[in-house]
Figure (cartoon, rainbow, N blue to C red):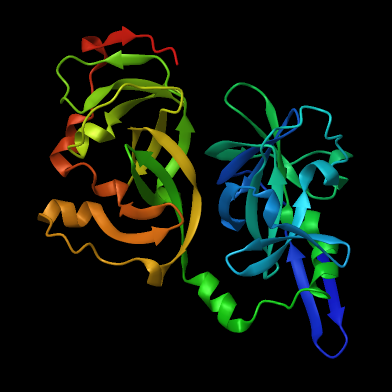
Length: 336
């Protein structure tokens, strides 16, 4: 491992110990920069949003971003990796905010590819000496994605920024601890949120295997990580009007306390960080199952967000129905 020592005159000394990376499975956010795919551990990701160029400013020669009344340092991964903006430069960019050593930083990427659980594999020599690279993982399509160590990537930048931007106060740090990370999506014109840790992966619609005897809200099963996973139409399950699938439709694979289910949603929005005090109880009377399913409501930039507990979308007896026999299935191709 490594030991980092950071001293400031009159403030004290900080010791940081990094242990060698071993084989592990972690939830990660996959992003694209130029033609390469990178993975960021979700444990450091605060929020994901579209970059608004008018919020970018120069402060003492450094790029910063105005976000929720604060100024955070901004780092373009293209510039960090010395990739020309002429190489597959996107028309729109995205901002991933991350907490690094108590300081919030913004990482600019070309595209968000979704989140999934990844297997971490250590790099062998001489690649293990690359700064800012924590390991590598193999994606479902066989491509390799480097796992970024945001703390190491931005260490020098953050130290320089701290001399310009005031450090996070203890009150702000406490507020950060009390925040929830939400995976947000849309059904119709309504936005919904679920805890990030409940979501395992986001898939594009793919070939389904229909099951004639299954309940109406079960569209079929899909193969995911070499196992059949039931696909639930969330519109039908919530009693909403059905709609045709389009290019924005996604399958959200969720872990329902050890049982995996793919929920069909109209659109994936973003990962959002919400303070717990922003979440208010639903004032509309709900049946007992509804109270378990809907955990609250909060306001965000786009309006009201309903917070769902995906583990309670289905009743216990309905979860038992999800043990679908392949012999009764009919294969259906889905092209989106």
